[in-house]
Every structure is written in structure tokens, then in C-alpha cells.
Length: 374
Image (cartoon, rainbow, N blue to C red; front, side, top):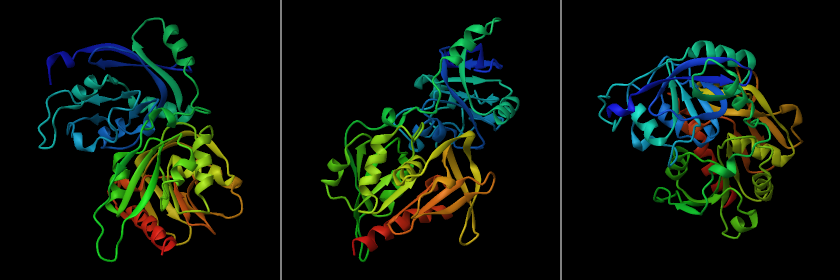
């Protein structure tokens, strides 16, 4: 990495409750603002920083040492870095000796214009967020007077009521062909409503013989239906699901007509379309180690998660059945439409945090399409 990218400048993260955490900015000092959340993943930092679901958020990495295996361009989840900022306890600064790495993490973030803060007491910061909940925060130059940073943190809009999905969505239609059909396994045409879909999700859909047409978030349902898709997939994305009325209307137009599968934000959108309600979690679920139990079989899956909102199980209308639950806090993790070809999950089955058992959900969607169009 070039020497000019390793300059360390004293800076601070100021939360909207006045709490400050000192550290050092790697690269040129700019400002960053957003909701401050913590993630428990021990790896996958590049996937996290490029995941559109982190748009508008400053990500605190709880693992003490980050960046030792460098950057591999093939694992980017979007065309550019999506997180608003990143906080580390110890960021790996020297060059990386890894056969897949093209550069190290500090260089990658500096080129992307991502403000990162290292040398922070991330344990204390994480405990504060767990106790007080996710808070808005501002990264800027260190000043003896904390007031300027506090005022900037207080000016950040609340994540509740904020539609961010439309801002990360594609602005034009894209087509991605699936794996070639083979004997006894035809391909199906699936519409993807882009609310911030990850590349790895598209790859899994393609691998399961699904040809994809990816639509901008605010495309009217009538326009999508005019192309005669076999089903609809509603993916992950950032922000509050409730103000995404365009996506809710699209889900309503498809539910009961064609098979629908939703992940993360898509799970919440489908629930809202059916008449349920959502609410904001205190500090969200962000990590690769969240246990989820199947309410019918008792089987436990270890899942990858990234969301700040959840579906209220007390608000479920008739026709929706809770199928999966979070063991840690008993939040709703999955829904089944009893009389319709539709289901959704709150977690990310494509991320495969070690176990690959939840990848079966993509095959389930394929088989649902096959049965519906037999």
C-alpha cells in the first residue's frame, strides 16, 4: 500500500447522546455520519462494507483485529462501498500476503472514500450500544470541545421512517441468465425487485436455474407483470420497510397470483403487504452467528443476519404462519403463507456462515415455481 494512505490523524466518533470515542482515521480525514451499529462477524469485512443493507450506517467491528487477509474483488456485494463509515479496534496496516488479495483494507477504503476509525475501544462502544441501543453518530476531527460533533450527530435523521431502499436500487433493468437448463430441470423467469440486492443472492438464484430480470425498486407492478415472470423475489435492503409503499404494492400485486420469496427487507415488505406490522429493534441483528429454530421440526440453523427492523408476530393476519424464531431474543425469523405459494425469512441464507443448510431455501423456491407452473 502506498505510504500516503497510512497517515493516521486523531479523530473521534461522537454519538447523539454526547458519548465520544477517540481513534485515528486512516487516510485523508473526511467526515462520516449515520446510524452506529455493531457486527459480530469475525470475517467477511469486505462483504459487509459493500452490502447495500449497510447504506447509511457506521459499522463497528467487534472482532479486535480486522483486515489481515486483504481484499478480493470477487466478493464485493455491490459496485461500490455502501457503509457510511467503519470503526475498528485494530486495523491491519501492512501489506497482505494472501493469494487472492489484490490490496489491503486501508488502501481499499481510502480509494472508496470510506472514513474508517482505528484504535477505538470497540468493546466499550459495543457495550454502550447494547445498553443504549443503536444511535446516530458522527466521525470527525478531534476537538477539545465536543459540542460541534454532538450537534452534527443530533442532525442525522432517524432510521425509523427512512426509505433508503430506493436510493441504492438500480436505475435500469438488468438481466442475469441462470445456470443452463438440464434434463428434467427447466429454467424459470423470476422478477427481482431491487431494494439493495447483494451479488451473492443473485448468484444463488442463478445457480438454481432461475433467469433473473432485476427491476428498479419503484417500477410499477403492472410493468413487471407485463413481462410474464414465473415469480417474484424481494431481497435485502437498507432502512425502514414501512415507508417503502412502492415495494409493498408490488408484493400485494404478486401475492396470491405467483410464487413469491423474500429475504430480510423482503421478508418485512411481504409481511406489511399482508397486513402485518414492523418495529425497530433496539440494536438490530448484525453478524454470522445467530441461532434460528424451526418451529415445526425443532431444527436449529446458524444464520447470517443484518437488519434493524422486525415483523411483529402479534400483528400477523389470518393466513400467515410463523415458521422460524430467533433463539436469542425470540423475534420472528420466518413466515409461511398458508394458502398461497409464498414464504420469507429474516436472515441471509446465501451468506452461509460456515453451515450451508439454509441454502436449501433457494431450492425450495425453485420447486415452488415448478409446482405452480406444472
